[in-house]
Amino acid sequence: MSRTPSPPVILMASPTPAEPPTSRAAADERDVELERLRTENRQLRQALASHAMVDQAIGVLVILGHVHPDDGFTLLREVSQHTNIKLSAVAEHVLKHAQGAALPDLLTSELHAALARHSSRRSV
Image (tube, rainbow, N blue to C red; front, top):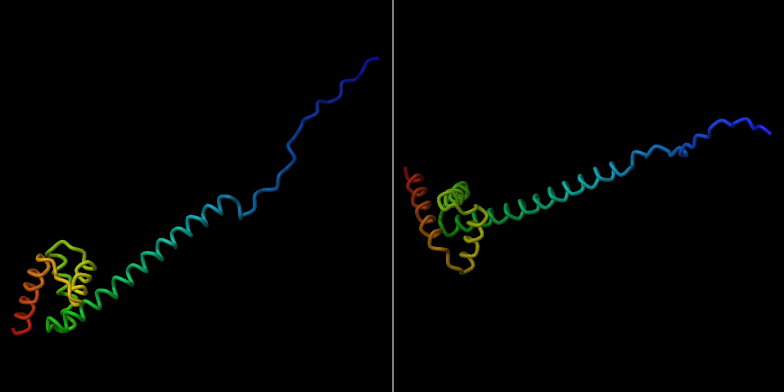
């Protein structure tokens, strides 16, 4: 008996549905966005805390340094720039000083110089 050859069978993988938009790539994008938002949230919290500290230090300068509130930030900024110390760190030292701690010598001398510059500007 002669057999007629049957046509070759082509095995095809069963069709898989296309991955929905909530695929691995979308999940990765969500993870990246979530991390970006967490970083932004952390930075905003730090900025808010730093801003509050700077505002309190300005208040200390107004009371102890007898400066106008508008000059308080300028003083902190100048001391920060002249000493190469971050403004938030200068503010923190000023707050600790108001609570009884000693100011580092560099900050003390620069703060006195900044106060002198500003008092001479106000009197002109």
